[in-house]
Image (cartoon, rainbow, N blue to C red; front, side, top):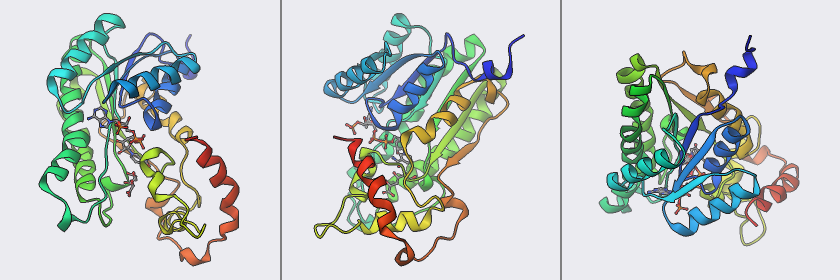
Length: 287
Ligand code: NAP
Ligand code: GCO
């Protein structure tokens, strides 16, 4: 008889992670492959897809990758057709592709606003719409959306991103409501502040060698006093992609080192020397 650990396996499943040439998407794909899934991924340009294929090859993962802009319905439909023909129907979709623009709202153009909403909110709508019919027909499916601290909190300069990630939380609940009857589970991962290229500008050392003020701020707001690592999110991703979470639906699960539970401390109280070693290993990620 299969044991509980088998419920966390993804053998024979096809997982599509959008925007997964590097960053969190690559980590999710690596985790899924480790427990048996076949990986298909897209990215916005060929050089990124090629970079991703190299990375997957180094990890021993035989991934299918192709260029596809998640905001373009025709490209998404073509990608799903090609992936289905080459690998198989998609069982797991991770709407991971995302962008952020850090611009004060009064200075943000409508075009810049629309760019963020298109990728971070309309993209997951388009990609989910492309895989749902086949999931319904086959009687099962998993959709995992990339939410954020900004699905719950605002902050200066990220109005479009926060609006998109807040909307993505509600899209998660709506896909659950509309398609749960077909044994389709739609949940979201809500990462805290994770060390990836997207957040690199918030961690860069200042010209005088001191910590970035935002780096100090985030550490003072995080009980763990550190940025998350991509591997911190892998277990939750596997859980939400697997049978082990078949009765969890419409949830956003935050994996933030405790940020949302903590009022924070005075950044001036932090002992900066504690972070030097960790930071050096963190910066190695992108060499
Ligand atoms: P990332 O490093 O910026 O990677 C995002 C990937 O998506 C990149 O490869 C990007 O390509 C691609 N992409 C952008 N626009 C696309 C489009 N229209 N079509 C297809 N691919 C597109 O981001 P990340 O830090 O790994 O984060 C991944 C997801 O988690 C994002 O949705 C992000 O909002 C969310 N998240 C991140 C954090 C964090 O702290 N890092 C925390 C919470 C949530 P380009 O390289 O050309 O942009
Ligand atoms: C920012 C960061 C955040 C993180 C993440 C937090 O500028 O505040 O980029 O938005 O990316 O979304 O959960």
